Image (cartoon, rainbow, N blue to C red):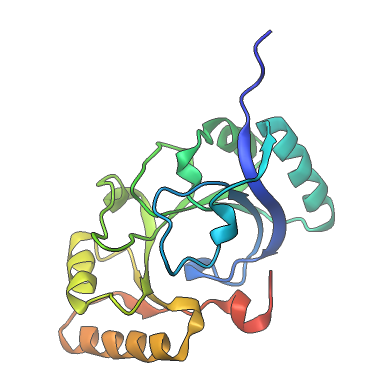
Length: 209
């Protein structure tokens, strides 16, 4: 009998969503192992390698235990880059449990999942993304690194529909990045670019996991 498919998972835990438009909502996080970009500014480098091999059913049992004491309606698939792995079976199981599903991705990969929310975060140097996300994304998140140019912000704002907010997120809430983010936001306003917002990492400000 063939072994059931497994997923390589770093951790499963509950917290409040600290980033993006879903900030403050109770959420179960599934952090997957592996990343195809490995950015120098990454704040979850521990997810690049390692992890436990879990079947979707084993992962679901862990989620059940968490939800018994923390009955969150949302689950967030994050990483690393979760779409490096075939998460379709797990997503199907989570949907059957009645959970709402968020996927945080660097957007270089696409899987047609039954997800409620795609958070798209293109990365340097090219800030490329799969075209499907122009329809599927709920938000576009840009980490404001030292190399991020206003031209990139402008390009991405124009390429995505206006209904999809573009978020400027300071790199690890660093003061220099906060200043740069606010400066970029001010310039965007002056140049008539709509639906651009500042977005800090609340979990780092308040010590959430």
